[in-house]
Every structure is written in structure tokens, then in C-alpha cells.
Length: 357
Image 1: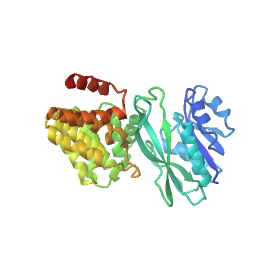
Image 2: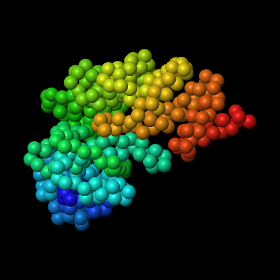
Image 3: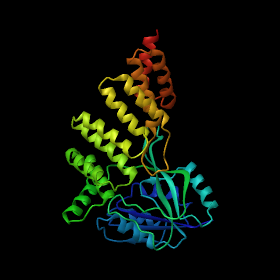
Image 4: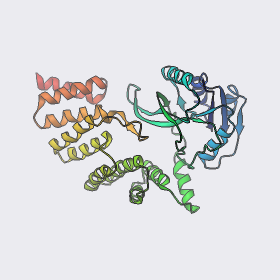
């Protein structure tokens, strides 16, 4: 069985750090915590779990901090967590079982990261991340923001999840501020930096600027396929917000240049045709969303509800508008089985009760 160093970078995380460490301590053979300037009880809490606590200045560079944390690790593997991550008991047991089967040949272990949840606290936004990595000198995090390690060697996928349970708003504008500082300093953006810069502009409400950056990214042709597909969806959302509906649809269709249809994109295309009240065409795209299947080991973002709940709900609406109440009701029942307490499901339940009387 391999031994794992849990490596974390933290700052002002007194509200969530204990929760994280309590959930992960059985998995870790060593805990390394790097504090980047806390002004609360974060360091005090960290020292209750490990003597390997280091304090370094924050330099607007997540990779620099993560690389330092990994450099302090002494075990065969390094595992990272953010302070607002949690490992549920069910997932902890899965991870412990997988860990017990490791034979040291694994270089990168990919684990699901659940970053969004529905009204019943079930994961709704999930993607695989490089979570456990062989401890060796070539290992380097890259990117001052949205840092990552490029997988290499033997990569394995574990069917377990880490839950990202954010508390509060964090530091609004922090990531965007770092990107803008990079630009001011004349740093050349690679495709990954451009993609995430566009996302930060979009989240910051600077929609027109985000459109230009996404277009610049897509015109480069050297981006990662999953980022290209996601950029098409993000560009479409920005154009939709600006009232440029035809351009929004074309942005979604552009995603088909990179790979076969993804459920998320099919739902977006279906929504565009619903806006135009072209119910039959919209229904076609929602049907495709149900047929796509999940491609969750590509590294791209997966919105679970786009594979079942959203297309079922929207097919219910489309078929009802087309006059096929019987089929519409069947799709309503499918949606109800998935999320029985959702407000829109309860609304439709009352609607069909009246219609069927």
C-alpha cells in the first residue's frame, strides 16, 4: 500500500479547515500545510493536526504555493485538497479501499471533484481532477491561477469524489485581479490562461470583454479540446446576455467542430430553439442530450442535470406545446423521479393534475 502526503495551501480558513482535516486525516500518512498569510486561527487549527506547518508570503501565484507544499512532502505520493473541500464517509471508504490496492506503479490518480449541488445536496457539477500524484522532482504545478499538473505516465481513474463545499464568497475579484496584473506586466497568455481569463471576466460581469477573450482563445486553434468546447458554451452565454441570440446559437454549433455533441451543448442549442418557439427542433436537441452519454474521463466539466433532468423537463414543455400531452406527461414523470422536490416539478405536477381532470 502506498503512503500519501496530504498537501494544502491555506489562508484565513478557520471556518472550514477543521472540517476538511477531520474528513481526510485517515487517508493521509502525513499532513503538510502551507499558510500564505492568515490573520485568523488557521495556523492554530493546522497545528492541531500536524507539526508540518509552514508560513510563506503570498505572491499572487497558486502554483508557486502548491509547488512549495509538494516540495515539503516526504511520502511516496502527494495529494492536494483545498480547505473548503470535504470527503464524505462513503467516499473516504472508497478512497481507503483504492489506496490499499495501490502498487506504486500509478503516476497520476484522477478523482471526481463535485463543485456544485442540487436542492437535495446531490452533486450536479462534477469533473475529474489530478488528485494524487507520484512525489518526484519533475512534478510541477503550472499557472498562477487555476493551476494544474499535466498528467503523465500511468494515469488511473478512481470512482470516488471530493466535495467542494465553499463557505461564503471567498475573495471576490481575486483571480481576475491576478490575470489583469499579469497583463499589465506584459506576460504572454497561453491558451489555458486566455480561457480562464475569459471565464473570470464573465463571472465578474464584464460580458463584452469576455466575448472578445473567448473569441481570441477559439481563434488560436492551439487550445485543449475540452476548453475549446467549454469556451463555445461560455461565449454563447455571454452573447445571449448581450441579446445577440443568433450569434449565441452559432457559438454553440461551433462546438461541433471539436468533438461529437455533448449533453451540455445539446441543452444549450435546445434552449435557443425554445426561445424561438421552434418546439420540434428544440425537442430534437433535448433528445440528443439524453442519448449523448457522459464523457467524464475527458477532463471536461460535466453538468449532471444536462444528461437527464433538464432534457426531461424541457421535452415535457416542448411536447406539451406540440399538443402531445401524453408524451409530455411521461417526461414529467421522468423528471419527477430525478428531482421530486424541485419547484418546477411541483408546478408541472399541479398543471398536469388540472389538464388530466
